[in-house]
Length: 550
Image (cartoon, rainbow, N blue to C red; front, side, top):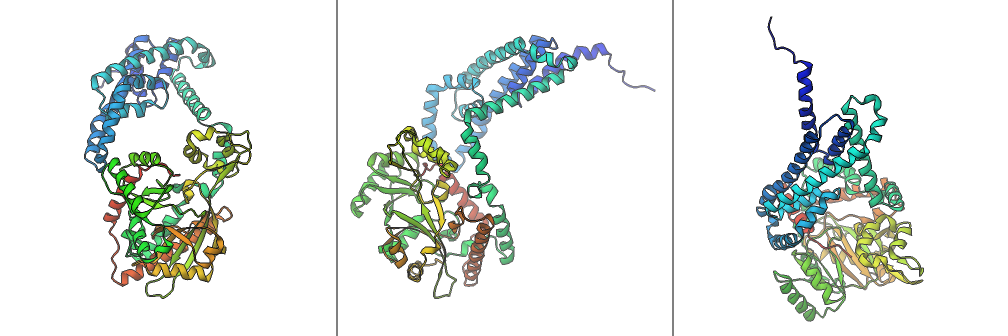
């Protein structure tokens, strides 16, 4: 009987340095710093030689950097130039010039900043940093970094090795411990640098408040109910037929200006007038903006916002021309200017009417409370936000919006608004406002709705001066009309239970599907899934360029 002869122990021992080096080389593609620390610990124990440790770690780290660069330069840039985002080539060209001037220092610094390497090297590839320059700079940085990590770990790693003296002959214990230690330190450093105790506590408590849950956590039950209704009514896209007069029924990609034009024509006295800006460049759109304001007698402040938008994205209150110019330079999306309805109060009124019915109904009313903080003469705006029982849960949004003013100390009694967009995602406080409903208000909303061709269900965003005016159905201004995808946003009243919120949304989608089915019987065809997907992709690409909302 014949077979392969077993390898002698001496042969296995001779191959051990190779396998150790190969292991560290591969480990650098997962956690490069952990691999370098592990190699340094083995150097301290005498279990690996310097040439093997250094060559494995250096080559692995450097080739990983080169791989990220190549991926972004060839695959990422090719995808960009063949996608709809190619229209932003001008911004990319400006970024290339900016990176070319500062790239060397950025590449060097990113080597020593945890978390910065991945985005930096991908950006370098995408922005076409010269390959030779990238290779030389990253090779030098990786060389110095690898030598530093190996040397320092070897010098100070003996104390750690003492704890594992019983396992000194088992190098995998050392490597595993090094990986665990480094990962733990990174997590701790990230927590300590990004979060103080106040932020950490707020983020923990926020999970107990369903009002602030992220979409991926809150909406799965609604999505399941949507699927059930799609089976029941035999049409997943049936909601797009709920409002035949609005693109996609108001599910995605509808023009705000189109619905406002209908309202301005049929109920001008109740609508805040608006107009789309013309022009393909910031300068051209500024000229158009000036002409519109002069023709319609619109003065500062006024509203600039995208024609396609959801959840308050991109809405800005413009107080002077400098702010207008800055806004026009931030996005190439189609924009509209709208006369500012001072209010100061705002509500969202969700309305529905079945096709063929003579009268519609108000389904829900949302009172919108615009948040603010009040100064005490000592605390900064940021400190006041973190002290507030509710504002702290939206602190990141408020602080970004406040900019440098977050460091300003408010005088005693002085107030600082935290948001002007009447949207929950932008930090507005919502309350159930059905107490404001009256027969006169419902009749007025019904009259206005029936004048909008092909509109049956959706939400009006309305600003008004006094509750008496609103209850009487007089002296208010419609600033937006949203279609089938709009929500009865009163569900976000913190006094509501999670189940009551779901119950309201389920009832709302019952109405949307039922009205869509009624319109389908009348000959209105729903949008296809393919067209719906295209509309969503188009909107998502635009929304990514919108400035932060006020």
